[in-house]
Image (cartoon, rainbow, N blue to C red; front, side, top):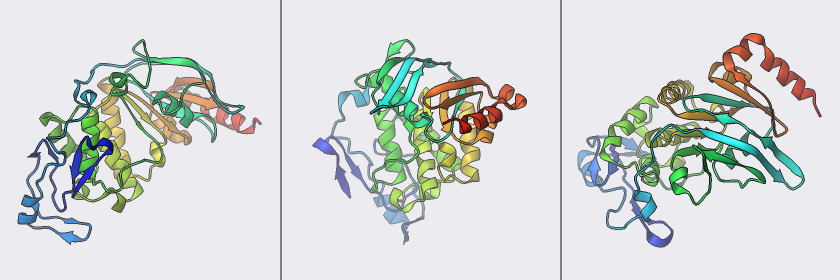
Length: 310
């Protein structure tokens, strides 16, 4: 089945029962017998379904095929504020995030955590202030900068008719990473998150946690320098998914990636981060090493005091 996007720039074909990711017409694993959406495949069906996910004769826009930037990103915020009517969701946030760190953004409901990530991802415009990537001011028109980070919201948006492989392939093309060397990495990620048997299943048939894991596979395969994750610990992932996510996020940070994620769970922030940043009513109330704040008990005391504020 073929699909066109707006403007007919590219087309997708829907494989049925095949455990193979296909880019540029080349399968990265052999076709096998499998079950998908209640249908049993066979060798002939799988072989026939080794069609290209992306139609090679229809070009993408030029920026889709540009070489991606690689490096270690330093993120700087200067006086960042965001207003919703008379409500100040972010109030002059000025912070610097160095490469190779996992930062947990902790706060109560309505603290401004999600708003901050949405602003950094360019989904929401700033009311005041600015932020820079390696000293370069961010702009939605700067596709080269946008390709250096990836954002996963708490509730994912996806094409319901796509399967997992098509979603991953689409993301890799947008990031300019649909090259032969990415193939083994995708397979490794699918195995690690226990998604290989579900790779050709439509996303609409998967659970919320499985869809989130599929989105993580796409993100990790694209290998951005900055990860922006909104409430990943409330994504519905199972214990295996959490373990795999933490291990791979730690490895990415050790390799130089900057990872910012939001959470409302104190124990998560203390156990899985290098630093904790506490937001309340749009303002930064505390920031420090997770180990030090945990040992002193400051985080628990601070959150208790903030919950009593009106």
